[in-house]
Amino acid sequence: MVEETPVAASAPILSVKNLEISYGGQKALSGVNLEIVENEIFGIIGPANAGKTSFLKSINRMDMFTPGMQVSGDIVFAGHNVKRLKNVYALRSAIGVVFPLPVGLPMTIYDNVALAPRLRGVKSKVDIDIIVERCLARAALWDEVKDRLNSLGSLLSGGQQQRLTIARALSQEPILLMLDEFSIAVDPVTTMRIEDVLKELKQEMTIILVTNLVQQANRLADRTAFFLEGSCIEINDTQSLFSGGASDQRTIDYIEGRFG
Figure 1 (cartoon, rainbow, N blue to C red):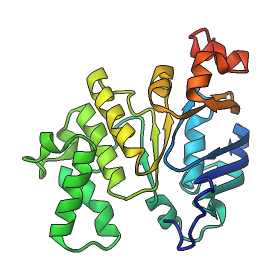
Figure 2: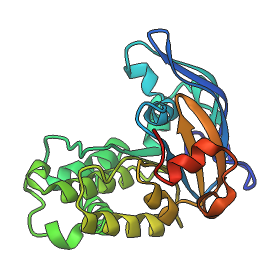
Figure 3: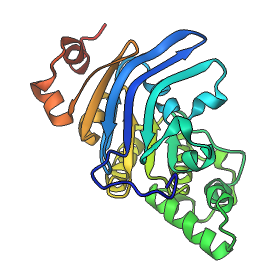
């Protein structure tokens, strides 16, 4: 958890009100209001430059490390206002992030996954070994790498590196997992394997899935938001959204491939 104060079971895990994001004075996102509840996969679809990645960055305070990025509005995560948290490390350790392209640290496969537990004070090698095996298995990677844990993560294939990124995120023991276009450089077979992993992880954590693949959102998300030109156009139950329930013609056009 981010802080010791418990969160009521009925409270959303993430609540965003009047969110505005800009870079050097140029708006990237404005007027966003949404809530995400525990143990749901919340999909975000939309074209490039719609503000999807900026939204993710605002949740774990990446604005603190992004020159020119400014964030206003309320972001309440796990019952706490993100902008008022003094311990940003605690916030970011509670949120796992998977980037569009595999971003591995220049470490072995083992050390990539062992880093987070070491940082939170796990000292026993036996305990770390258990964490590494569990996280790699949950990312559907253990069987492929168990005999070469001391090899560099950068030597893995693209799909394996992406699953290593997921294992590394899971080793943080997050309560929220955010994925930004995880399948952009991954083959279809590996993409389906990762999708199966996400369906299982939903039982243990909340997931935000940013994707340009509308059918991927349809397969995975419980609810889906459509972002366009820095605005959240609409949010709806995914099944409804993809079966004629969209209320905005722009959403319909995007889902049906007529956008632009």
